[in-house]
Amino acid sequence: MGGGASLPVDHSPEGQMTTLLTEIKPKVMGKVLDTWKDSEHKEDWLGVTFDLEQLVMRLDMAKFDLGPINLTKLRPLFTDSMVHLDLSQNNVSGDIKFIQPLHNLRELKLHKTQVNGDVGKLKGLSHLSVLMLSGTKVTGDISAFSECHELEIVSLNETKLSGVLEEAFGNAPKLESVRLSDSNIGGDIKIFENLPRLQGIMLRKTNVSGNVKSLKGCQMLQFVDLGETLVEGLIDEFKGCRNLVQLFLNMTKITGNVIKIGSSTKLEALVLSNTDVTGTVATFGKFVMMHTLELANTHIDGDVSNLAGCKSLEVLNLKNCAVSGVIPNSVASLPGIEIDIDQTTCELPPRDETAALGASFP
Image 1: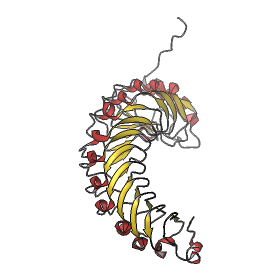
Image 2 (image 1 turned 120 degrees about the horizontal axis):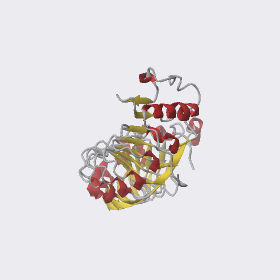
Image 3 (image 1 turned 60 degrees about the vertical axis):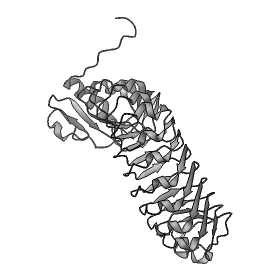
Image 4 (image 1 turned 30 degrees about the vertical axis):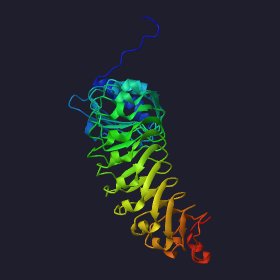
């Protein structure tokens, strides 16, 4: 046999059983896998589901304190029988190419592991609906996922992946959540136009661009983070998104009057700092569930006494805004609240009324 030839991989039920008992079980702390004893009663095995041919079809081992272990050791488990693979948040490493072949895979969750390699090796996983590789060491171009038309949940943030949105997700009409923040990914957000299921877009600190009017038809949106990107447009475009819970548009070219989103009373976090939005702070007085309101370096004005009803606030940043008045005691006395009114004419209520509750002021 010539040098460098690899040994054959035993994908049989017996080979998989050996892998489970000798490679995985000894590397899980505690008694979590006490049910893994022998080939009998495998329906009771925690974290593993077998098909009728006794091959592994689901591996659900997120946060199992598994490892250290390399994907190469698990190759016998990776067959076309597997539809779900979740090893996330474990001490797992190795090149992602070793999970092939998994042509019938529906869900791939390896986020917050040490896996690496070029995602181009995953091309052809056309049945994927869930793809989660965030916080890993994978590299390559996201165009590798262009054939994944069934995608619903995508989480690739905090990676070194590159490419453009259009080439990866231009034909994924079922998208519900897209997390690509802190990556080298670019492209136009227009590809999200009129996606009826879309609930979340997290693209912070990427190179994406486009006009937010493309999101006007995404009525189900709850979470939007386009902060520190190249997007532009009017904040007015979000007035129809009545389910919005979080909206982050800081350090973008967003303009318009914030009164246009006044009907989004479910908002819990609104971050518009360093934009050219205008309007009055009174707009936010009815957002009783809001815990984060950051408007620093915007054109917001008005009397801050109108915020008296915001009794869930944890962060209030009005730095360098044209606001005035006294921060209501109902807000200033909230436990642990962080308030920044630097470079404004605002005032805080007497410190002795709030300091005992742990409020934090500059």
